[in-house]
Structure formats: structure tokens, C-alpha cells
Length: 125
Image 1 (cartoon, helix red, strand yellow):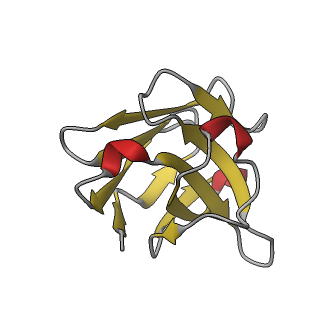
Image 2: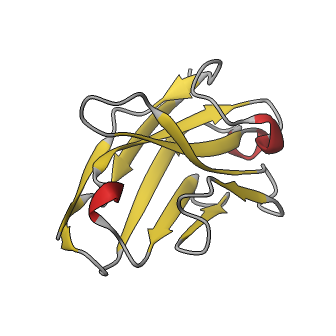
Image 3: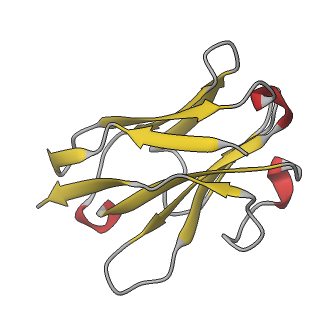
């Protein structure tokens, strides 16, 4: 069983930055591909970014490409999401997820093995 705990959400003005963190409680953290998803009020959960177990490969949704950067520190069992140039449409609950599949195959929330409870990001205009 893997527990994931997100942190770092908050209220920020448009154009600002936030860094989300996700800490995992597992000795086999480096075995997992990790991903960030988000869910805005009244909308379905959507893919944001994923990273391979080695951190060599990252993948992003078109809506965040060039603004968000996902990284991981396997020594700390933690993944990060650096969010820059935030827009009001980035407002959502952000969820961390883990799976044993290749990071390149992660694009939908279905099938992710473990989930965190989420952290709320609010971007004001």
C-alpha cells in the first residue's frame, strides 16, 4: 500500500507561481511512475503531467506545457510540480497518483493504482 500526501496548494494571483509536493510512503518509490491530475469544479479529472521512475522522461498536457515542470527526488520519496505563469483556468484540486505503468502511457485517471487526497490551487484574475 502506498500513501500519497500532497501539499503546497493555495491562493495565487494570475501570473504567479506555486510548487506542489507529493510525499510517498513506500520503500519502492523509485519503481513507480508518478503523475499529477487536476479536477476543477464541475469538470472531470484530467491529466496534467507524468514522470518516469528514473525522472528521465516527463510528459505534459498541452494546456500546461511550457508553464509547468514535474520533477522527482527518489531519495526523498517526493515528486514536485512547479507551476509558473498561472492562469485562472488552472484553478482546481490537484492530485498526485502512482502506478507501475510506463509514464508515457499515463494520460487518463483510470487505472492509476494509488491516489493522494489532493491539494487545492486557486488562481485569481
